[in-house]
Amino acid sequence: MADDEPEVSELVEAGLARLGHQVTSVKTGEKALELLGATEFDVLLTDQAMSGMTGVELCRKALALRPHLCVIIFTGFGSMELAVEALRAGAYDFVTKPVALDVLTLTLKRAALRQGVGRDLRQSTGGETPVTFGMVGGSAAIQRVFDVVGRIARTETAVLIQGETGTGKELVARAIHEQSGRKGRFVAINCSAMPEGLLESELFGHMAGAFTDAREARAGLFVEARGGTVFLDEIGEMPLGMQAKLLRALQEKKVRPLGGAREIAFDARIVTATNRNLADEIEAKRFRADLYYRVNVVTVDVPSLRSRPDDILPLARYFLGRFKRPGHEPLRLGRAVAERLVAYSWPGNVRELENCIERAVAFAQFDEITVDDLPPELKLVWDDAASDNSTLDFVEQSYIQKVLEAVDGDTQAAAGILGFDSRTLRRKLGLSDAERDVE
Ligand SMILES: Nc1ncnc2c1ncn2[C@@H]1O[C@H](COP(=O)(O)OP(=O)(O)OP(=O)(O)O)[C@@H](O)[C@H]1O
Ligand SMILES: [Mg+2]
Image (cartoon, rainbow, N blue to C red; front, side, top):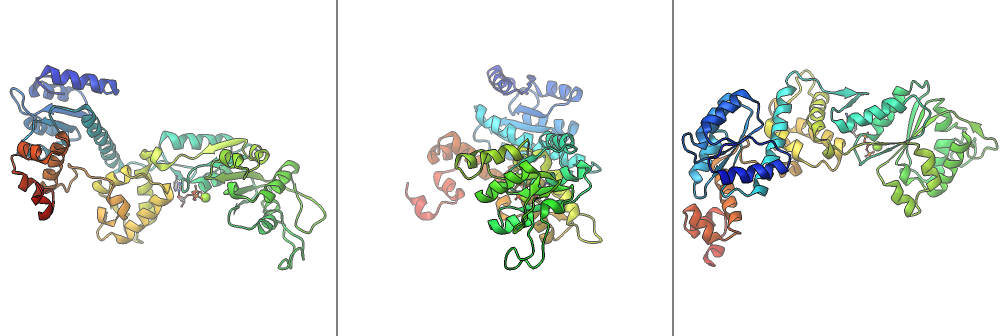
């Protein structure tokens, strides 16, 4: 941080240190450049008005030295031109003085996100997509999942996979089967999609004539897996009566086909999945506690996509490869698009990201995905004064908003600071004539 007023630098330094940032303070731009030449920094905070070099000058020189540095300039009120100049000089943002720590913290948070994106985009040229067991993901959170999968795959243990919708539970189940070395098949069934009788005959089989449509006997998935893996998806929605039958089958390692007199032994690994909280389901008496303990010897929690933002861009690139037009290179991700992908909350997790990329590829007109190709909910998530397409209007608007915030929305006071009359300010804020006349 470069600032020649000790009160400001002490305040900011103490505040940021408490948040875990390491701050080195200097009093002049020249000193700051010296340090930047010698050491790698993430962010440069600089006052505009210092003796010697100004903040904007420092910004230009610092960026020439360290192109990926994030520069934030402290400016006084009333200097709209200065704010514009700062952004033109490549500053990430400006913060008006007196510096409010919460505003600065928020700006730093957004800057960190943006830097992460920038770093990731830089690395992506020639970088490899991290793939384990056919799944993309390099974040610590998903690596922990792969680690558990690797350790339990070769055991007989029953596994319950939990996670929000679209996080990749079925892929994890397949990975467990593939890594198990088991000879038999991977058979999957969705327990929520079927009435109890049908589910029972699918799982346990039936004799010929057991019910109206049962012309021929069928063995059922437990037996058909032949030593492989049975994946019971949405186990939380299995009807209670069927839960009792499943529990018995798992205890005895035998099934009784519908209409049959004899029980048949099976050998299959049972993997289950749910996006419901089974503890709540037990509480509400919709799920049997004894079955829960039987299927949940090991739990694998697949983390939501928003809890592992590092995986978003590698996944996006992976899907760009999957959905590329035949005979063409995969489309590229623009920076503004990448920033939005990382900032969005992804309630539908990886499936939602997959659909978003497929849609964007279909919409894209050139060899790069643009913000226009994204679904509406992604267009809303990001407003960044320093994004590539920032216009003078946009800068002016965000500056006006900052001043308004600082004076608690008092338009008269804001107009005074900005050097407009309040009519002009109201026009700039897009207020209608009628509203403007009510003073
Ligand atoms: N790590 C990953 N790498 C690549 N593709 C993934 C990954 N995770 C999920 N997907 C893809 O995302 C989609 C959703 O995954 P999956 O069906 O496994 O999720 P799920 O958790 O079972 O969802 P639901 O609860 O809705 O059934 C699939 O198309 C899958 O291929
Ligand atoms: Mg699923």
